[in-house]
Image 1: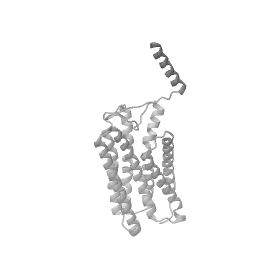
Image 2: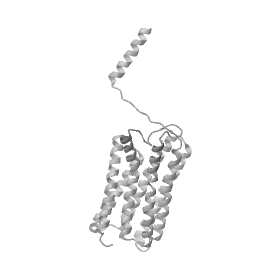
Image 3: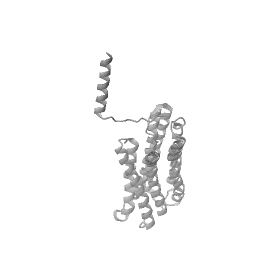
Image 4: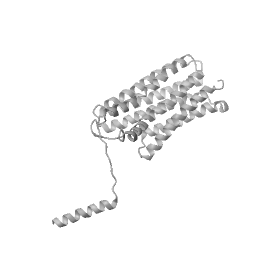
Length: 276
């Protein structure tokens, strides 16, 4: 492959830098609030893969990476980001008390894992044995799996928000965050069309943007809910548990000084003694 163009380096560097900063902020914030869960682990895995993508485009001419390396890490960024999103939905489904919701989300997760593994196997075999000679099958497989996965990420949360205690604005905002997954499909369509013809640097540019965009989207839920809480001074957090099936509840825990609690206990005891 010829040396990478300056356009590829600039687009790749800017898009990956934004994605990496968003993810680092997300992980630091979740760690600070002690809300780290499996979705954050998937986001961290996607972050590591995205860093490798960035390193790959800057060191390709020096290290002469095998082509399959980028194909693998690119796929890992996209699908690990999807795993992060679906695990966010799983946490809400677990709190909803609905077995049907849980089974649907588990089924989607299993299908994601299967599609991810199948794409990795197909891309690895294609790059190792037939790289740049036939990309038709990979392009078609990538397009189909991406469209199916992104549609699933949009449809899956819909059942959770019908009877929630969130405001109309809150519901629209949360659903819009999940709906942002369709932006990946918007990038996938031209990427797959170009990739169907041949693997070029234009294909790589689309791939870099797609990977970075996937990572940004998987962080949107955390960033948007935080921004909403700071700006509107209201809680908008899917992490909240359901008070009853299908209804969100916000639990506010207030910490009282030990002396206050002790004083209150003494006052209660004195009152009881006087009554006696």
